[in-house]
Image 1 (tube, rainbow, N blue to C red):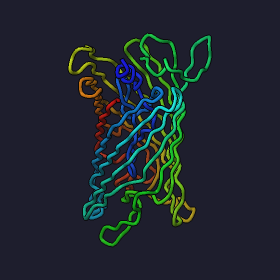
Image 2 (tube, rainbow, N blue to C red; image 1 turned 90 degrees about the vertical axis):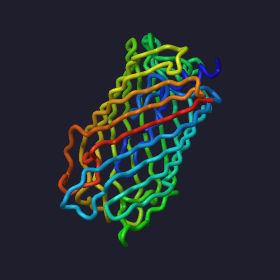
Image 3 (tube, helix red, strand yellow; image 1 turned 180 degrees about the vertical axis):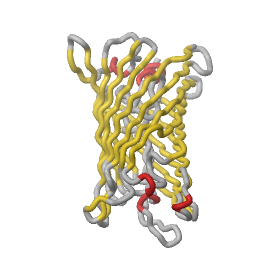
Length: 324
């Protein structure tokens, strides 16, 4: 019963989930009925523990005008652990490893480790807002008029290298680390309509300056629909969900010596179909798959922004989590 309650509790974990050119996504939204990239708001029960991994592969469009400096592909790997301090408070620790490739070389290594705190609450019509209690972490949204919400704050620690060279040159976008702390704030909400769960998320990243350089801040609006396609508790695959997400991203310009840089920033929208599979006999495993395709973009200097968001061929994401 404890394992079943924990599986249901992991309807979603809110961690900002934009997949970004420099550092990839860190979304830990996993569990039955949850999206892959968009954060969802339910928290872990008191003492609950989850561990998981996430892999994201980015394939870049390449252009003759940028040879021989075309970025070719990035691989973002994350290992994460989450713990429920109380029904309303959850902490997550993330260890990332990044591999960034271009035509004439690659950089890879441990990236900046991250820690996040999440506060979960909900809204009931006629009652108002309340913090999550023990029973609120072991429910599904189906059949309930309740709107679940969460606030999050995440900070990174500059553990990754940020001076690595390729052919004697240091490219800030090709580094595993940022060289300084970064901060993320976010809010998410979820509501069920029969077998359909709708999730929304707003979040923003802010980067600190180092050595007269600063990455531009990033703001995201994510919307996801998750529909139960199959459910049979006694089967090896006990549940399969279909997922469709819309992921909007606004990028401010990077700055050097306090001045906005060329070939940076803009707005873009991804259309992201995916699926999720629940495998309870394998230590309550859950597998999420998603493909992100840019369908609209308005970049500041698109002809100069090879290797930047919006100029991918695609982004493929896989998550695997286990509940204890």
